[in-house]
Image (cartoon, rainbow, N blue to C red):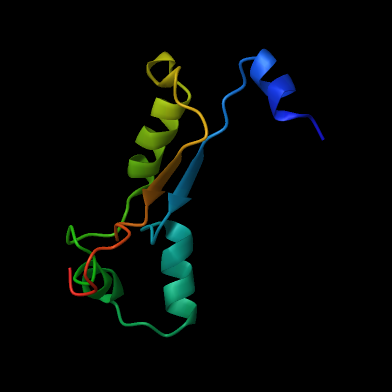
Length: 92
């Protein structure tokens, strides 16, 4: 295992993206296998604070940021795309 200072000397940044419930073709297959109704995505969206499930492009934007020069000074960060901020009320 490389020591943290060795990684730093190569200017390697380490960040993490926590992805929540995402509307993908794979999720649609899982929902069908589990016997969910045709309106499962609409029903699930009602339980999200912003009224929709994550989309693949939401994750792509976060990845693009972390891999761009704009995030040059960002390391050791966790971006939570779960949509439920820590400490937010459960009814939010």
